[in-house]
Length: 141
Ligand SMILES: [Zn+2]
Image (cartoon, rainbow, N blue to C red; front, side):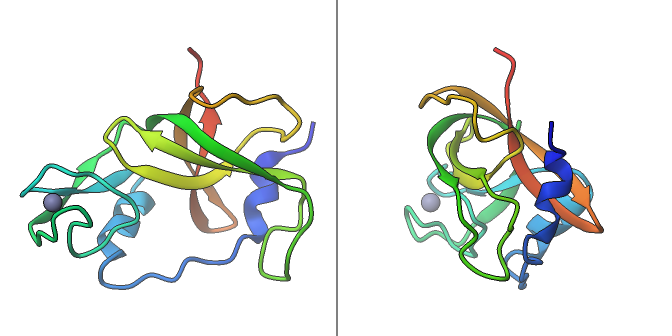
């Protein structure tokens, strides 16, 4: 079996800014957080300074359980450039979290296993060659 942890190492380093710095700092501390609107209750991803639902500016980061369900996925069979992972094939998933955000990330599992929309997935935070990444694993249901 291939080492999927090692396969994620050639992903490009994240570009952070003041809007996403608190999210990255939480991730570096091993916590997955999501932006949440104190005005309307929406939760979303990626972090933005205002709410995409109501335009409110009263936003806080809340702890995520990391649990969610598979919305969709794509298997990448061919690397499309030098700055993307070249360890094809791998799977990119769109996951609807329990908190209501839709996140995109890599599935840390072999890409040849059948998948079904709605199946449970869990977020995982991994440190690979000094770079912290968040991806997903198949949850035990
Ligand atoms: Zn809002």
